[in-house]
Image (cartoon, rainbow, N blue to C red):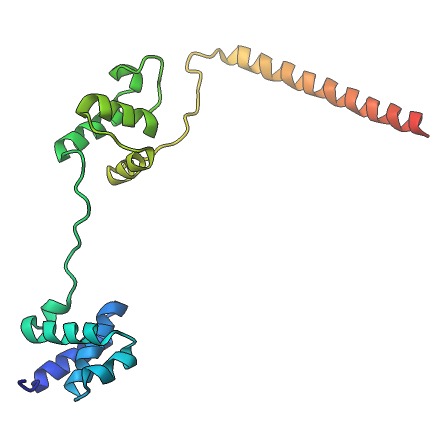
Length: 187
């Protein structure tokens, strides 16, 4: 076993002080304690790790240096759709309604409708939760639609509001009269 250099010890101390990653701090601490002469079985309870894990960290450091301690990026499950297909999905949802792409009478995209479209178009089946994750990944947000009458006549709207307020007032008067009569009859 070759001894550690002063530079290695200084580097590990500096990394322990500067890192904000708890996992990396523990790995650096394992190496630091080993540099100070502790055995693996002594280090394990100090850092609350298995003796074998301590040995793996020390051997990795000896073989690959600090770079070996940095975890590799984990690959997740591959996407079902290619980037081109995802881009086409994004374009379709952004610029077309479901009615435009063979869902007659449906005007708003939902995850369920998007799942059906992807199944028809690419023969790939997604769950609704999977499609919602896809929406998030594609930076698509969904909201409930609000309806605005573009061709509504402002005069008719004003008249409706006035009539509606009158109806509300009439109902309020009737309910108050009913309450008053109910109390008189009870006594």
